[in-house]
Image 1 (cartoon, rainbow, N blue to C red):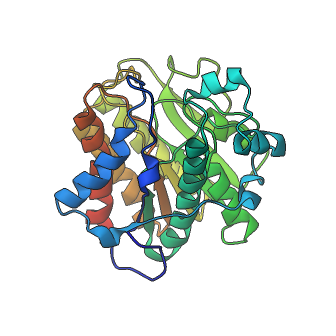
Image 2 (tube, rainbow, N blue to C red):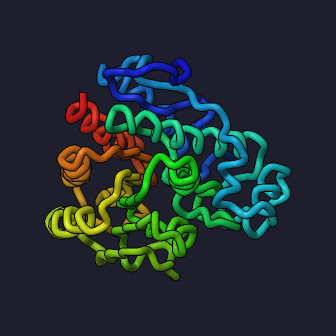
Length: 309
């Protein structure tokens, strides 16, 4: 891997070995998936080493634009209250915090590449349960939130649309931008899934337990184009969680791998048709078989590569 420095005619992907955090034996989060996505894309020839770049830790300036100073200090000094650590779900370590800062910079880097190439992707990220002053649900820093703030603060964009298609509502992102009209938050998620107490996104679409391909895709087809036309964004963030799969143990939906792939295709089609740059963060995936998670995530990278390059 190399630092991102030059223009490219190939898909650019943020990835670092620190994305795979060492967790206690038997931990329920599939941390190995990040390493396996990287290895699979290389093995099959979709990507070479030149597709990947290694982010550095994000500058605190951008983190503090959306996260409370007291919370950031707790993270950096490993003094997060035990109850919050429990809600986050990861053991609190220096390695975890370094990982969060690097993943977040990866999404910022992707915004710069996407403005040039049309698309860029982060193997991790989509940490949409991170609120301004707290973390939960395997999320500590809200990478999309920090990157959106970065784009606005540096004057690079006028209006952002966050397309969050993880099966769980992007509650942290919704709360983070509830008073920021320049960031429109759009979440399609399971009505009866975590979080039980939802925040209010700018547009929430709640789907019933057991939703399969037809209802899921038709909902997206009916909603997203009209929403883009209404919001008139000049930048898109896409949280492409694969926990909508029927195989997912936390998702409560019944979307097939092919349906998930069609979802990705449609989102990219909308971006391409309107010449809108898009940055993709992976979001969640909790199928019991790692193969199901990795294949569905890799399909998102394959789709972007085939449609843009």
